[in-house]
Image (cartoon, rainbow, N blue to C red; front, side):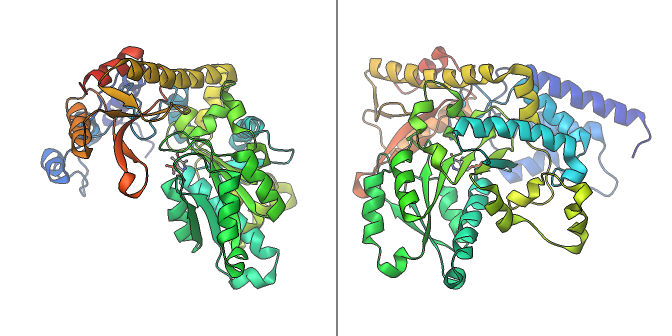
Length: 457
Ligand SMILES: *Cc1c(COP(=O)(O)O)cnc(C)c1O
């Protein structure tokens, strides 16, 4: 592996050249998918007993595979929750891989885990959670939500032996992210979904708790609110829900996977009042904190409860409980054992730029949403569906049905101009297909937004 040959040097140059070119390219090729059949025809069989060589494989990646993949940081990629990792973070992602560090245990990863912990201290400080609150970096918001739900359920069961065989219930609004339903399946819990077109608030929670039968009420162990819904950027009534959870002894989880970055933006921070009272919080640095994929985070008010739920035991792991080896083991606080030190790219970028630059870049996303709102109001062919919330903007094109939005999305994507996708709002027969912008990339311009609106005329 370690003898230098010319092919390796050439491949290394290709890779580094591509990485530098891509990292400095602010309007990368948008990318458009091809069918698996077509890709097979174009690249052939690449995994062979003898190998096809680095140069050939790299050429196929650069010229075929990457062109059939979307560059998520394109400034006119405003679909789903886009991303915009900093150059520093992307560069350091390469370094993180090259460094070959096991990020599960202090014994192996102490130095790098320490750097992750400094970033985590900053994240915790953004939430305003009390002393002792702490967390770990996960593969994403889904894993963070799962880890928090398992910790909540285990704490609930530990408090009363009768609950050991009882199936739990989680209460969430139907505007909660799809991962809540999916992860409830993983832990075999039921979810009571509270329907709402707006904020999930204390009154709705009180009402739905009241509607439960006494045996079902006994099964409720957690309430999940969202700090910036994925669809519309709505921040639930965190303070009101926190108060009920405190009174009723329910675990309060705030899913701020998308919106959590806005905690660093002074103009948006007050909207999150109440998050400091959460038992656990999810924030995705790979969304609005400009970290490359994949990097989520989960924070716990009482990390020892998470450790009770997640620490793995095995004779091959006994060494880690030895006094001399003791330290913070990220594997004890989420469902993953072996892990890369995935908080490290964010650490380097934060250390390099400082947190003020982050606040500015996030404020720019919020500003872009307000700009889009104004441009929409000034254009006769489009209308706002609701005022912009965080960096999400929902709007309709007068006279369009679902098929028109789909055709428009495909047209803009296929031409390589923009990727903006529709969503729906409302319930049942009132469901309406609308267009949606989500801003993350601070390099998106007002002209980009106007240009996209112009494609709807
Ligand atoms: C994106 C998102 C998730 C899922 O996060 P992944 O990183 O995609 O696993 C969960 N909750 C909310 C609110 C989100 O926006």
